[in-house]
Structures are given as structure tokens and as C-alpha cells.
Amino acid sequence: MLIINSKLKDLVKKSGKTQGEIAIEVGISEARLSRIIHGYTKPRKSEEEALAKVLGILTVEIFPPQG
Image 1 (cartoon, helix red, strand yellow):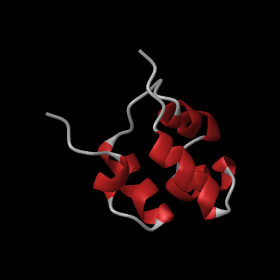
Image 2 (cartoon, rainbow, N blue to C red):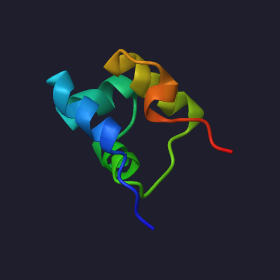
Image 3 (cartoon, one colour):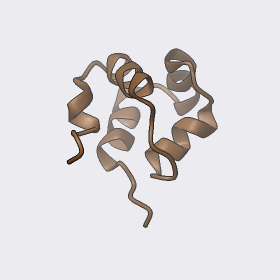
């Protein structure tokens, strides 16, 4: 099942940066960021932390703990 991370998608839009710009700051490809946003792949812990830092939020705001 495909689950889009709507909160992440919204934050990317509100940041005023392109997905490409954010991906560069995070250190991943734009394609990987898109796959994370659209639920095709789970981000690594380091990617979660880097995305949160770039977007100026806490990691748990976009990637709540599982379990």
C-alpha cells in the first residue's frame, strides 16, 4: 500500500525550496526524496534527521516512532 507522507510533502512546499535543493542539503538524490515522500521507500535514520534539520522541525513531526 502506498502511503504518501502528506506532512513531509507539505513542509517541503512551505519551505520555499525545491525537492532538488532539499535533497542536495540532505545528501540524497531528488529521486530518493520523492520516493520517501510518496511512500515507496523508508528513509534511513540519518536521512530522517537530516530532513528534519533542513526543514527546521523535530524528526518525530514527520516520522513518528513505529510500534
